[in-house]
Image 1 (cartoon, rainbow, N blue to C red):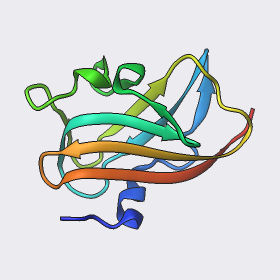
Image 2 (image 1 turned 90 degrees about the vertical axis):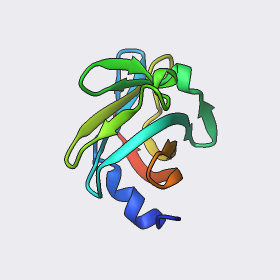
Image 3 (image 1 turned 90 degrees about the horizontal axis):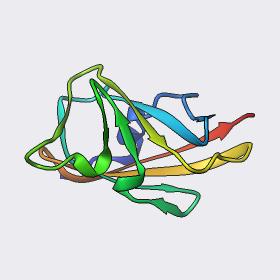
Image 4 (image 1 turned 120 degrees about the vertical axis):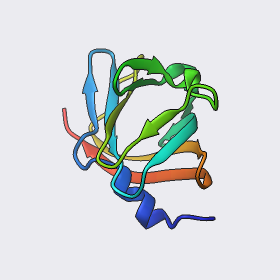
Length: 120
């Protein structure tokens, strides 16, 4: 079952993309339906790939995206907000295209695509 890109884009929390410390982060909020993520990543930023072991998911407790799997899923209830952090590189000011790849138990693979401008 394919979910339209425009609907998936609603997961992104507008204006949440920001630099922090030595990296960058943004937020996703579940505004669609309860979702069970069984794999998260990679994340593409302007065509550059960040592997699951480079991504920290801050939900009820922080954990690497590589730890999310079928036996240890990330459950997103309605309204649940998570922060995805990628250390090691800050983004330059300007517009960035971001694609979050995930595998859900309910619908299979999804790609959350959005553009956002970051200001420093």
